Image (cartoon, rainbow, N blue to C red; front, top):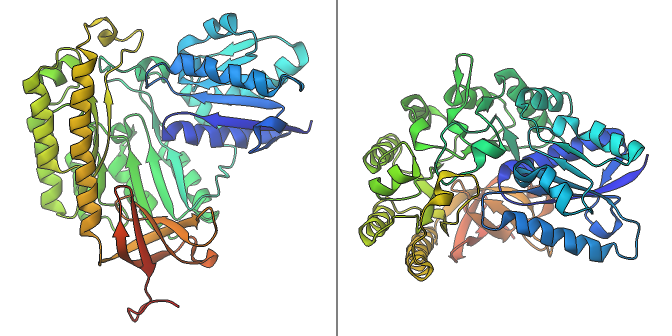
Length: 442
């Protein structure tokens, strides 16, 4: 069988990792990756259920696919990811154009599911929670992402049950992969060009396998010579343990950016969210990290307009942002997810939520601008990831994950280079490479 598969990925980095692993798997049954959706024999949507109207976006995308293939042979249409997990059989009933529905813990079954459908022409839904079998299967297939900065999922699922979140229902309970399995994948990625490893998990700092925690794992990956940088996301304040905090003092490869979602600056709202941490505890984590390494910076996530949020709660969030000076964060108006506790709570006025979001985002953007502005006329280390689209410059990232564009060449990809920053905007730094004698490279 010689077929082409196109995957469109929505949402988080874990979905990006999963999509790459799906590619690795379906190669075994003759499917080749294509970037041109119109030539695909198989069209897969890897979906996300975190944001508003996620389900409707899927059906809108299916409508678009129908138009694309109106005068062509219909492709095999697969819905994967968290919307598939949440809606499962309902999707097959509502949209006959969909052939297969596969949840995020069933990707080890994708090859057999595709072949079974091709043979029997029967619509199939696979949404069991079976993370162990999934990762045992994927461990036998090489991760051929081939990227300088590569994602590596080490943990899935969540036991926190925040009242606004669907993850426990779409990804299942917390599961940590065996340490050796992760290290084998990290070494393979390194042997195939990865210079940076980004460890992923819904609660990545809850990683626990036998006697090993995330702190142990970071030190083990640090031993891999080719790996120059290590990052992890997304963390929960409840799992920001002292052993992990201490890693920032002794690790030579862990980057000094901590993404630690707080969601709100109000203890009342945190309790209503069932976040299981307080603002005082969050400040203590901040202080401990800053004491260990003053160069550490923070990014976060914020939900604005959560049910019950009053002006004083909003002001508490604004004050927290001013104190911590988060350099890169995500902020959204609360939108209810079906099946969660918060779905039944009374919403606050949309206009008020919009006004508050604008104030919060303006402050967060100002923090980003100020941080980037402070780097102008300074030299920073940049890991070069690829050429820019026009092939005239190179793209890389700073230690703080900020995009950097500067004059370089293809041979610089994979190197960490000193770059003098000339100018900046909110999201990007622009610079010029300097050599060891502190002179510009011609």
